[in-house]
Image (tube, rainbow, N blue to C red; front, side):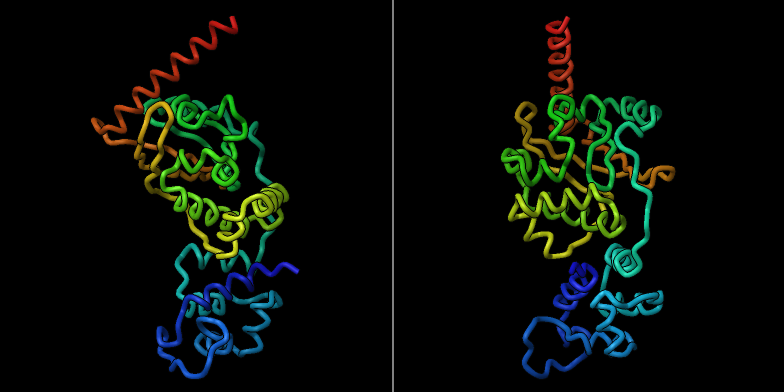
Length: 281
């Protein structure tokens, strides 16, 4: 029986040593980190209550208890939110498919001509993109590239595309974990996780760590076959009217080598599209 909540709490207990929270490290420990009874003591709940919570039987658990457990386990804000999602799963409407990206969003992407931009959902499926993003990721001609997790873990060329592949892989899994907690009834997400677990040993190992992380901003290092080495800062923009959709925009400082290479990539992509159009005509 699946017990994601219990597995998550166990991995977080394992990170914390007794001396970290002012407890004497007495007795031989079969597993690293805090014992269940120690978490219960520090959180101010009975041992039986905490065990039931970790077993997934803590129905109607209060905010106060979850806050206390989060404090003891030193959860960051994203992990704290994930704990709430797992302890009190909510049914959410399955987001619209790619056809649900409204025209205004597509126009917004096209207006960002100088930077690669795309719209993704909580499964990290790319639903819309602009020309420069297509030049960077080849979304239009290769539909398999539109699932970022599949590309990262199942495409043999991903390791070459992302020189810092281990970090990209860990970040991808941590974001999928967050989405799985928010959407426990999403059959498509469950199927994606199952597929990756079967086909990728790296994914299975990272998934077992129960890491969760929100994608807000960062730097992506890409070794593009045409443009060469690119170091792109990215920002994610939440859409209040579409809570499960996010705009991801990549930027490079003006005058930087990455900005110059992006300009070359844009020119190359435009030329390739004109050539392809003339062939089809």
